[in-house]
Length: 528
Image (cartoon, rainbow, N blue to C red; front, side, top):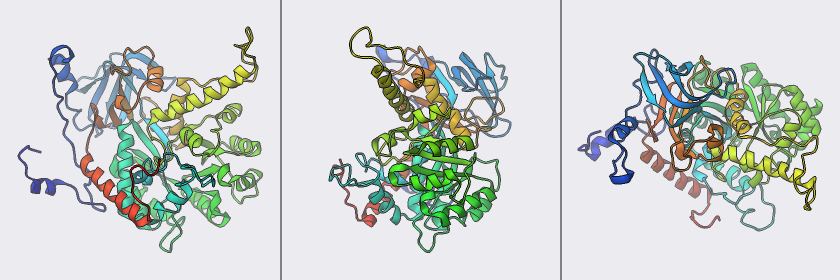
């Protein structure tokens, strides 16, 4: 866009509102302003960093190489490299190794960078973006304490408040903005736990937003509020035929199969999911009163059987019988460590999973209460588990030397490592969404979902440990380049193909409408 373009011309080029194609518009790569004196980059360095992204990335036959970075493949068969290259052709990884020959290929200069798989979030309610931080203190339910944690709360103000007044256009902009925000943070794959299906129009808006975001996603078809226009779960067949007729696309489908909705509902949703051969996901929160129906499921009296196609969120407050049944059935579990700790779901059950030889994937859950970036998720998991286990070990001794630093007793859970939580946030996430053959590792033959992280930044340099730096030091500002299925979506710190200013204004307009329609007062300081 030329600097002389007038406002009328710009409006013509801005994509229309929800429901029409071309909502996103391609951004241009901005040139960085040069400095002077001691803080100025050399001309050659500045030129290298400001190069354009590879041409036509992600299209058939186009090749480029991510060259010279510290490569953490997350695939034991591929290994890790202090300095190596990743060759991409079309949407797939062709090779990973040192000094790869790639004549005629464009080059992404990854010197001083960490190259690794994109992160995977296996449980995020994208439609709630307009209520970000509204429940910074909030619990799941009103505990009748009269405190700021009790009111507002998630059950009353989100599920039985804001959610009821969403229009399809609100669903679209909330999902789109949340998806772009996570893409900017290096989350290349998400399961959208979409509990907003008041009508087929709401459903189609959510799916269109996932597609327009341009990242990998599993659309979670969960319930709406049960109004006359709702079609859950039977509309799943139409959704599958219209939107997911091919397995070779970025967005796939998962069935929401909430057991707390009652036997008549969940038996139908589980049966339809298995008819369509798609995974089934459900919340499992003891503090919400869900334990009795999960006991029935474990005992085989719930009318459905649990299996490897099931993914459960939280699993807080569940009995040993339920855990062992789920482990033996091959079911997967996604833990939202920050949310579980803050909103009184219960203690994240990582020690129980370790005891049973299970591993979780990681999920952000709700931005009403906590950030949805992968660094927050990984650090929260590691900090919580190590805090509990470290205290277990300390309690095995006493404060008086020489017993103040005891050797851990046999059977003490192993401390989580940075490698563990990285695996939870990449490899395990892909497996739990049925995408292990496409993403989660940097493996030749898999699709190129790649993040390039700046290890020369002030919060990281000097680089001494690649896994350690990613988990313990980095944040979303270190996410320099993001690639999804070979296509560059973020380049040198700038998200491409999105008019973020316009989208923010659309989201703010949606927020204003939702607060008014829900009868909730807008006040930037009232809910803290």
